[in-house]
Length: 178
Image (cartoon, rainbow, N blue to C red; front, side):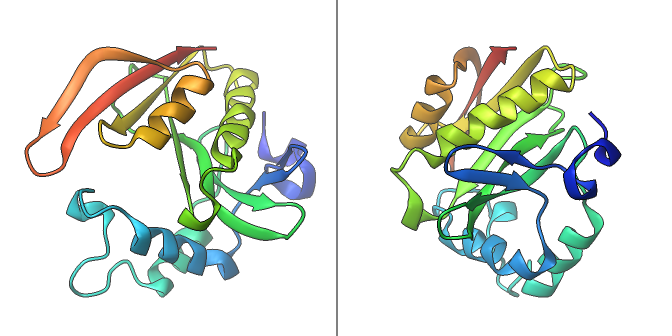
């Protein structure tokens, strides 16, 4: 799949309720809100620091410079209300084997419990398969039961691999063949 073969010069995926598409700079405030909502157990590099970084401006710059291809985080937009509620996509985290990206998703707390993460994850799995990937990874904190349920619903299984972080919990590694 190449960017120039896709609608509007970028990626666009649709379900009954959702659109998954590249971020627009004007939506950086949604990313900032996600950063502010993160659980206090999340490591410091994934939280807003004492100096307020990442700032809204820094997140806008990140959107300007990071365009998805067969790896990238897509904005998840509800079709009925036209609001962006988070992201779902593939990242090259370096945690899996070569050529095996990681599924990543994060939604605003106010939309949890409506099946949006599961719905978006299915779309990304189809995207990964059509992009030629044979297996995906996903990592999840042991205390994040909601995300663990989403991963199980879309066919990920927990492996024996774990990373124990005394201050943050245990990172569980999951995998799924495509």
